[in-house]
Image (cartoon, rainbow, N blue to C red; front, side):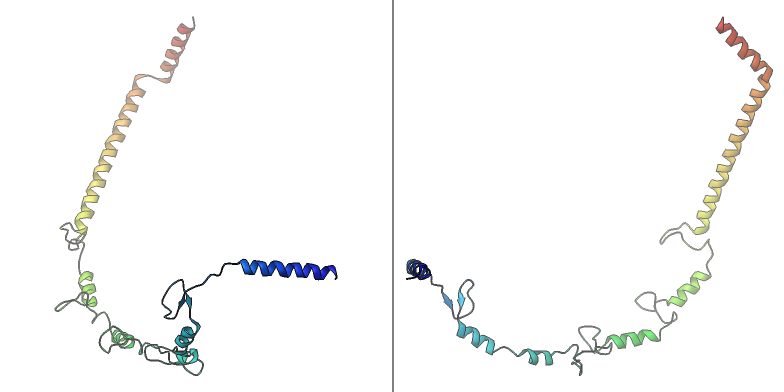
Length: 197
């Protein structure tokens, strides 16, 4: 017998021996398709899939805000199709149409009874002067009052600066009056000559 057949027979014997010695492992079968870690029963899987909708059927039944696919498979949703809220028949388009005709004269600044319009608010601000406009909401200080206090502060600072300049000029004058350049030169020479002896 050729050597290849002998090796093949030995290999077959080893495989048979390994298979005979192998432990048989059984896995529980889940026919309900609800148990994690168990093998799914093929018939139960087939029955479950048979009850599912076909992909083409699902795709043809998709709508967005009541709009279906066109011939190209696209769904076009316009402002008139989109609801403005969860209740009522208002759409985004109806809300936009409401805004389209509005001007500053008929847009209220706030909610409530008889609210001031934007135009009225602008008109009332336009006629106010600096002594009528508060610096901030609820403040009794006006813009004019703040400017006045800033002007006073600037004036005080200018006066203080002028006094400082006068004082410096006086000190310079006093220094100039006490010694001449020749006297300063003589003093320096005397000090250094005496210190050098």
